Image (cartoon, rainbow, N blue to C red; front, side):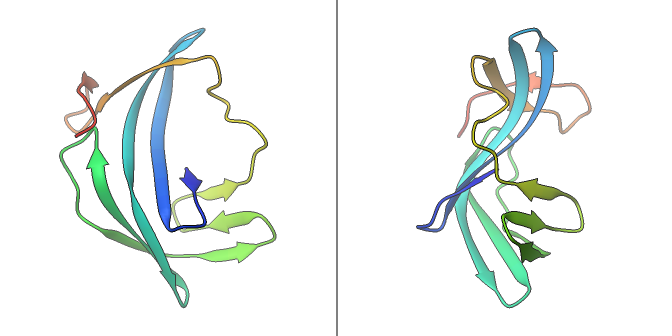
Amino acid sequence: MQLTPDGHYVSWDATMTGAATADAEIELGTYAATGDRITFTPATSSCSTKEPHSLPYSVAELTLTTPEAVFERRAQSPFVGVAIRPGCADTGAFVPQPIQ
C-alpha cells in the first residue's frame, strides 16, 4: 500500500506467479484518518467492489497497524521489475481484468 500526503492511496494484494510475474488486486482512491480510524474510499479498482472501508489503526514511528495487517515503510517496492497483471480473485480463482 502506498499512502500520499495529499490523501490518496494505491493498494495491491499481489501473488507471485513466476520469477518476474505477479497477479494483483489493485485499488486506487482516497483516505482520511480521524481519531483511531482510517477510512479508504476506492475510486478505481480491478475488482467490482468500490465501497468505502474503515479500520481502527495506530501509528508507531513509520509503521501503520490495523487488525488485518502491519504496513511498514520501505525504500523500494518488492515488485520492482515484476510484470503485474491486474484482476480479481472474488470467486476464488484469479480473473484478469482492467482497473476500472
